[in-house]
Image (tube, rainbow, N blue to C red; front, top):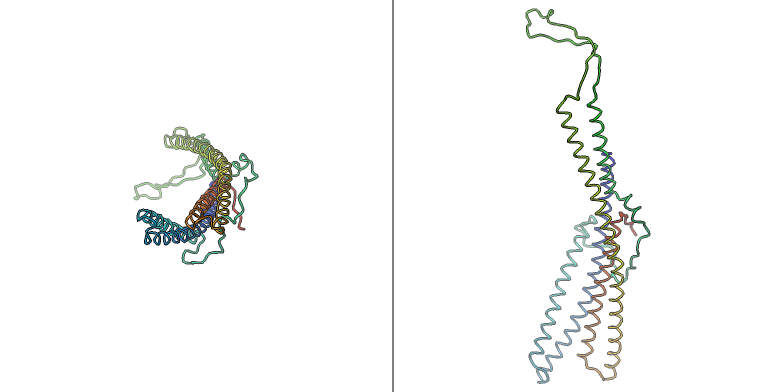
Length: 310
């Protein structure tokens, strides 16, 4: 049981580690796309800022408006710097997890919008619970202690042994040969009267009860993890659907604005404002898509599923 516990713990650690790598990988894919969107927003805002500067110089716009646009531009730069930092840090973490902390190159990384959405695993939670290695490890630990408890109970039974011979030497060495004597006959052992063994048994029984309660608590926690991850994934699909709908609407508005701009019915500033709105909804869509992948990985981990290398 002790060996099996170690094997189950090793398997549980492998599952947890593979999910850590997957979480870092999918986060990196989302961060990569977010960096690209912010770069487009900065370019658009930069064009608008230059136009406002020209308008201020010709008296067509106030300095307050220019200050607000400049502030929006600076905020985008701060957002870009933060996103780049998070991307670089997560890249280092992923390299470390995959065993290449000094290697700056990684396999080709897709944008998260190019990765196929996960589906609910075709696994019954009750079956998954019976096969989760961390639960099996805790069960093995309980069984180990129960076997130990049983052996200590047996150890309290009286035992009868036969001593074939036994020689002893007295302290008086003046007549050594007379000091030797033989001891033969049955020996009765009554460990039931041993306070030490009785105390050890009570301690082992108490440990068994503790392990039993820990095992039950871990099962309840595993059930909660599966229920929370399942509900989060299902509700996350609805959030993604809403975010996708909002993004599609913003793209339609942008398409109409571009047609108006070509026809001379819309100014450059108005077009750039619609572009900013479209990229904001795209950024929200990426965040929601990332969240769904994270929920899927949490569900996979709670079910004790192994991630297979693609």
